[in-house]
Length: 314
Image (cartoon, rainbow, N blue to C red; front, side, top):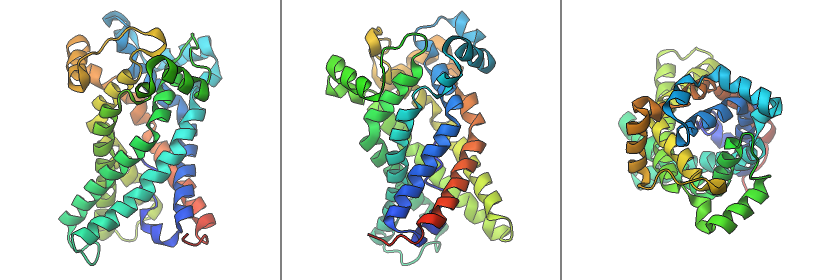
């Protein structure tokens, strides 16, 4: 789910503020574009259970859904909603990356720590809290774009929203300004732990690896630790991500409301109607995009770091 804010943490002092923001944002947007087909498949599987019976859900598979998209919507439909994904990802990645470093520094000052790395347990705590705060900050500031992204990606044969601005205007007009924040509670409940787990697993795994095998390639270490952190975070918070997607689609385009009992009531409803496995509908394409996503972010960030390293701190 969130990888771009971790790959360049050790080099953050070498970049100015502008370099940090641009490198994190562009790397995240490029990675999302490359893995957009898998991301759309994830969303389509996540929202299937809202208006499908059990028999149709059992028949669903990656190949069948990918074939349906090509046959009914065309190959370009794999990138449906990608423009708003980029519009969302640029500020989201930049804010999460930049604020994570600032939150870590602030926590070190508040706890009176003079140097980093002196206490492993304290460092893990700081990474956990800093990652969670960074995720909540970024998600709150960019949430309407995330909701629009979900609604555009979930459209199949019938087009209700014709683009970003049309979707924003339509949602505001039909559902009110608060309609742009449907599912925000589930988002914040999930995105904080997601970034906290991924940041802490990445930093801790990398530190342990390099302390035992300091001569290993930094590229190999970053790819392996980044992939592990994303898999760990995705596995833990995926049910909340699924609930978030379904709540974002409640009432969209005249849809009937399915879930009326909040986050935990929705979790209970899904478990009862679709079983425990229903909470992980769409996890397979999410796993498939982990390694390429981490690799693309890392390589892009490293290249951009070289370009922006000479930009002074503003």
